Image 1 (spheres, rainbow, N blue to C red):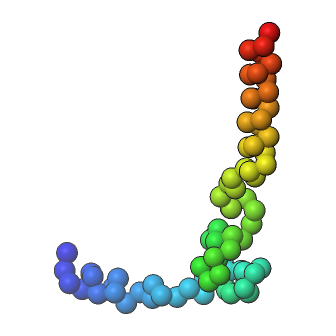
Image 2 (tube, rainbow, N blue to C red):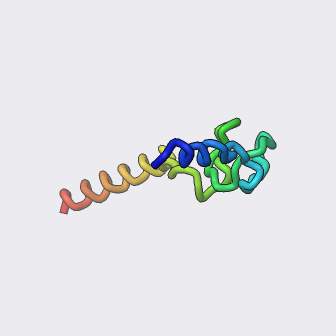
Length: 78
């Protein structure tokens, strides 16, 4: 392969982002790529499907533990 073969690749315009589909972030209105799950400007997720799962609220965990304790006490008594 000669050096002229590599020169052809160097002349191509790889920095042209006009062909990539973009949308506006619904939170900060920044122009972002359509395929991004999270806005690089403000850090918000674009849709609910992209958000990581949230931990269960503490009151649900405490309620479940209380139910298990009540059932365990009920079983031990009988």
